[in-house]
Amino acid sequence: MLYRPSLFQLVRSFSSTAQVCKNVSIIGREPIKIPPSVTISPTPTEVKITGPLGVTAVPLKDYMKIDFPLQDTMKLTVAKSSEKLQRQMWGTTRTLISNAIIGMTEGFTVPLYLVGVGYRVQLEEDPRGTVDGGNGQRLNMKLGYSHPVYVPIPSHIKAEVPSATKIVLFCKDKHLIGLFAAKIRGYRKPEPYKGKGIFVGNETIRIKSVKKK
Image 1 (cartoon, one colour):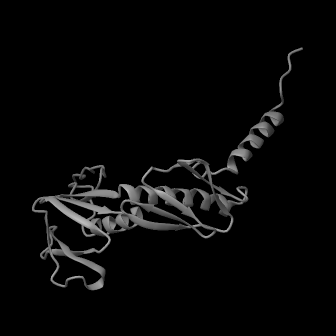
Image 2 (tube, rainbow, N blue to C red):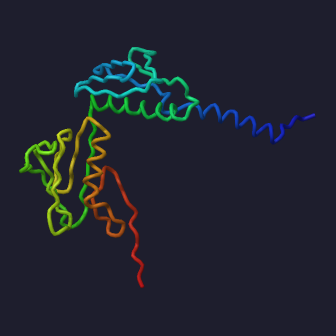
Image 3 (tube, rainbow, N blue to C red):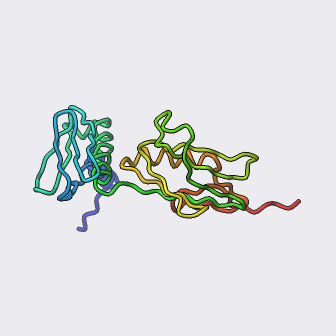
């Protein structure tokens, strides 16, 4: 006689398998490769990353542990992956450590593009100098307003203007460069009718057609 499992058995089997996967952070469990130029120094409260571009540290929760299964590999684990908070922080902290390693070896670069008739940008000396944590330079942007838009560049950001419609930002911290790029974009967000605005990286928008009456 041919055996056919009941619907209850199938559902129960599927649910138990799904529960096992739910208790593991897909990102957190991935090992992190350590470049030869980087030194990792973990403590119970943080992991210190030293590279060619500087030194930074990522805080660790008390339930986290750093292991080195291989000489050039680091692995992050948590005490109870079944707890939602620990599982979430597991993946988040692993990403922060990975970004810190990249930041201390290569850094992060973000291009911005000014799209629109008459939109222009130039890099100039900031007459206020290094007041409020600036690096002494600012962006002078023409974005279709009746006045120019001045954006002081923070001390942790390096900016270049290779052309009148392109800005290139460089920083060792991915989060900080993302915040500053978003700030610049906020002065003229891309609009969906004429496609004008400040675009970050490969950002695109869908152009809407204007309805005729």
